Image 1: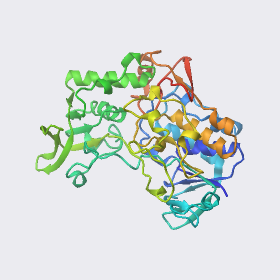
Image 2: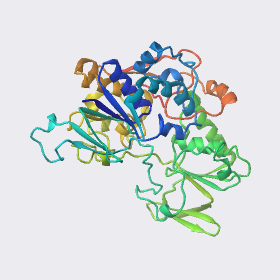
Image 3: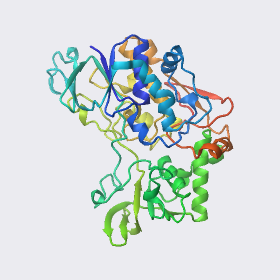
Image 4: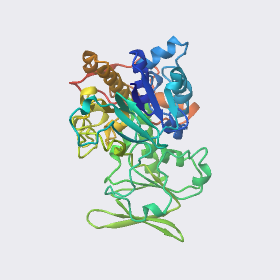
Length: 440
């Protein structure tokens, strides 16, 4: 039976590449109607990382053997370029092994619910699709991501009162392109303190007659601004620097200590009310709301499997202390692989951003190393599976001016990992027992 990979995004396709290299039969299931359907939703966004960090090693070898020419290693691709210039050509190499429109609704063991034990490990996995089709597999690599499971707008992890009664953008809207008419000239509230929020705020700042309010729970925006010119990821550093300038100039109104509690549709617009833990309330009335509060994994499809999930993050219990955002930034997350991703259900691995649960410290390059290790484990090559390493940029080695040079031609850079580098960059080799530089 094949290994089934769920999700044809960057990490799922990297898993397929490693399986193909090792001669392991596989089937790749993609819920969307195209490769990297979730990436396509933010195709207008430029990622932080140059191409040199965005291409998986096994995928590169397969592509180059087919005559593929790698893009400029120092260029920051958009999501659309990531698909067109890398993921789509890679997917073509796998032909009929990829099934589109194949949304997984449930996973179990053939003939076994979660309670039954005797003989369980010898039973194949049973995968049921939304259309009722069922497949069997000897192992599952779940790279389905979190993009379709956004966090709620409410500050306590619960939906704000009235949240379901008004339209809220949970994606990275194409403010300067396809979605411009929905935002230009409107009062817009952006909630969240991460890079997605910053991206949307900076795009909104380019629209005329568009009042912008930015709401965060923290008492100040220092963490959101990041490291500025000291950031080893210049595109990310430039993002924070420019955001801070807009706030200080008054172009963006910043509300701190904002704990979204209630949303009311009124004749004057949408009133968003904050109630902090002390009971103090403040409010803002707007026309549009963009919720950039992150994403969470949906483990419901694996409800009949034996998963050992951390009660806080929803990652594996072993991985959780390595990625806990209360203790770590992306720069202090150590390399990890099959051992840290394993569950009590042998043969099932959640990888990529889904493996991190609700921790925002995931790197695309980390996902590639995860699947390399997992596939090695499935092949029985435990020496390779446990030789986990990452090469990531060291912090504080280059200037955001490098990013600005590209932005003058192609627009602001943002995204999920990395930075623009026009020259070779010192690397920090990270083993499973060490921590390294932050890559996005």
